[in-house]
Length: 228
Ligand SMILES: [Zn+2]
Image (cartoon, rainbow, N blue to C red; front, side):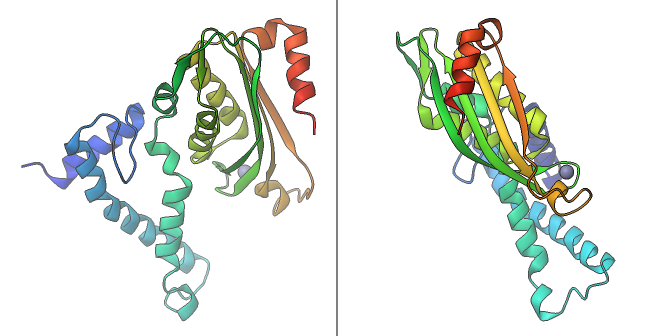
């Protein structure tokens, strides 16, 4: 018999090694024990976050048992679990499941992918658009998977710089294309609502590889195509 503690340890290591694709419905490793362990511990995880949110409410001088706040800790906990659900999904596995052999060798670009993420410094949202391009080298990937990869990395605590690079690296590792280009334009609520209060500032980050670095014309074509 395994204890709850051991199960939780197993989940932690699965998440930190980032090997498994978990969702409410399944796991990429087809390990039943793994899936069951996750499903069993989810309520414990939610309860733990609930407790912490209750403490925050008290810290703010609020009355956590007044009507409007009674269910807030639970709602916040569930909402946080959803907004960070990317931790339990493996973007590279996701891509691998939709790779096809094709001779097409021009740029593939999916632009204006909506992103909603949370900055890890303030746990406040940042949101905007991602543009993802690559030049195939014998392999293409289902277009919707590019958007899914963006989503999985975005649903974690992030900084925009790392998010941009992680998307590039995942595509590079799985497809080995001739190059990858990623640009993200986002507004950060930690800048808008607090601190410098710059309402309209947009942060742009880019990460490139292969021909997007070595070929000026490839780079220019990409930047021209994503221009609004
Ligand atoms: Zn921030």
